[in-house]
Amino acid sequence: MKYLSLWLKDYYDSKISVLDKNLDVDVLIIGGGITGLTTLYELTNTNLKVALVDADLIGHGLSSKTTGKINYLQELVYQDLEKKYSIEVAKLYYESQKSAINKILTIIKKEKIKCNLEQTTSYVFTSNEEEINKIKYEKEILTKFGANVIDYEGNIANIDSVYAIGVSDTYVFNPIKYLYSLKNICSHKFPIYENTKIIDIKKDNNNYICYTKNHFIKAKKIVLACHYPFFLFPYFMPIKTHIEKSYITASKASYQKITAITSKNPCQSIRYYQDDDSYQIYLTNSCNLCNHLDEGKNFKDTVKDAKDKNLKVQYVWKNDDLITMDKLPYIGRIEKNNDNLLMGTGYNTWGMTNGTLAGLILSDIILNKPNKYENMCNPLRVNSITNLKEFICNVLFNMKGYIQSKIFKNKDWYSNVRIENINGKSIGIYKEGNKTYKVYNKCPHMGCSLIFNEVEKTWDCPCHASRFNLKGKCIKGPSKYNITYRDK
Image (cartoon, rainbow, N blue to C red; front, side, top):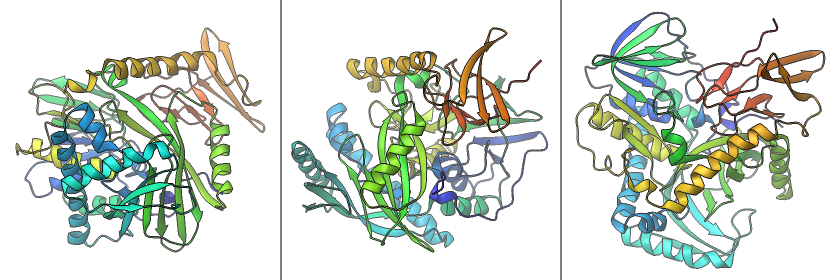
C-alpha cells in the first residue's frame, strides 16, 4: 500500500522550466491546476503575452487529489440553491456544469487527448430512509431542467443503499493526463514555469509586480488560480469559506461504468478507473479540517473502512476542498470594477467542472466578453453571508481550528513528536531513527500552531491547510513562507 494519489503513480514525461529571469506580461496566471490551465488554453488564440507559474509541478496540487469525476449530479446541490437563492439560480448552476462538461469533452476531442475518458452512469444515493424524499425532490428539479433521471433501488457497488437516482451523461477521466496534455499544448505558445513560487504581490501604478525569491514578473492582469487565494484580503476567505478534508483509497477491483455519492455528509463516493489495472476509487471520512486532528488515526480508519468492504487497498491519500457557504464557486473580480485582479476557487468538491467553468469565465473577463455565469459566481456577492446562522457557524469553526491547534500540539498522539519552547519560540520536533528535525511550530499564514501528520510526514495547519515538510519547507499554501529552524 502506498500513501500516494493514484494519479501520481506514473511518471509523465514533460519538460520542466523554472523562472530564471524577470518577465513583463499582459496576464500572469498563478496556479497550474485545472483553473489555471483552462484559462491559459482559452487565451491561446489571442495576441496577449501570458505566462503561468506554479509553486510545484503542474497538476500536483489539489487537481492531483481529486477523484476525477466530470459530473453535474452533485449531491443535493440544486435544492440547496433553490432554498438559498431561487430555482432560476439552481437552473443557471445546472447549465454552468453542463457547459463545463461540454468544454472538457470538446477539448479532449479537438486535441485528441488520451486521458482515459469514460462515459458513466452516476448516482446520488442514501442508506437512510429519511433522505429518500429529498433525493426524489432533487430528481424532480433535475427533470424540470431537462435531465433524464432514473430511479434505482438496491446497493451501489459494495455500499448499502435504500434509494438512488441516476443520470447517464456524466464522465470520468485521469485528471493528470488531461492537465499534462493541456500543459504541452499551451507551452507551444506561452511560457509555463514550475517550481516557481510567488511570495509577494505589489501594486505598481496600473501594473502588478509579482515577486519570486530571485526574480519578478510585471503583469497588467493577474489570475489567482490557486486553491486558497492568499495574497490579498487575508481575512476574506476564512469568514466566507471553510476547508473540508476527505480520505481516498484506490483498490484493485473489477471495472464498472458507474460513479456514486451519498446525498449528504459524511460523504461516501465511488468511481472506477481502468488503465493497466482496474481500480475502485473510494472516498470517505469527510469532515471539517479542524475536526479529527490525529491524521494517523484518520488514515488508519480510512483503510479499515475500505477493508471492511473487502477492498484490497493499493493507494491511499488525503484531499482538501474549499467549501463556500452558498454552494456556488468564487470566480471573477476580487475588487469591484477591477478587471485586472481575478480569482477562481471554492469549488465545493466539484473541481473538474467548476475549475473548467472558472477558466471560461476568467478568460472572458480578460477578453472583455460577456459570460452568462459571471454574476452567479461573483466573489463579491453579498447573498452568500445573509444566512446568519451559517455565517456564525463558519466563523466559529475557523476559531475552533485556531484554538485546538494551540491546545493539542500532538502531545498525546505520537511518541516521537514533541513541542518545546526554545528562546521564546514554539518549536516542533520530530525524531526518525537517529535524525532529529526541528521547525517553527507556527503557520506564517495566520499564526495557527501546526499539527504533525504521522503518515505523510508533514506539519499541517488545521485552520487553512498549509503544509510543510520535515525541514520546514512550505509545500502547500496558503502560507507563502517556510518554517525552517536552524540551531544557533
